[in-house]
Length: 202
Image (tube, rainbow, N blue to C red; front, side, top):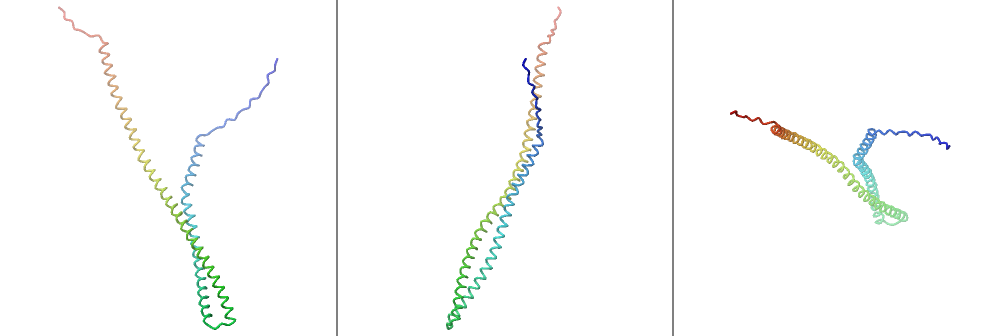
């Protein structure tokens, strides 16, 4: 005889799925994402506003530097004009060469500062546009939410009214059927019941 091999049955663990818990988890996750989504435009608007403010601070610093350089340039030009009008000596020649160097550096710095100011102005304009865009988007989202809520509120009573009218129609139709049934029943009874004829005796 062939011996049967005994195999142990492995018990399968039942995974208890809790549909309510999973639904609640999904809902809470969706609500978190929705909150984050609603906060994104305001966060972006704040960030762009901060960038604009930093650029404006840089602008003010650059303007102060530019004013200082322009003052030094004017002073150097005045001194150069004075030295050119007077008699030339060895010391005056040295002063003139130094003034020329200062004027050259001043003109270079003025050009670089002007370029930086232009760059900042362009960046500031683009950042301001983005800031305004996201603030407007935040406002539009709030308006859209209100509009959707009003639509939902107005649709719900209409649906309730439709349901009520359907119920009324069905209730109205039922008595008519009942009357038809009662009429049929009376007709049947009148047919089935023996007719009593009065016979006159002669």
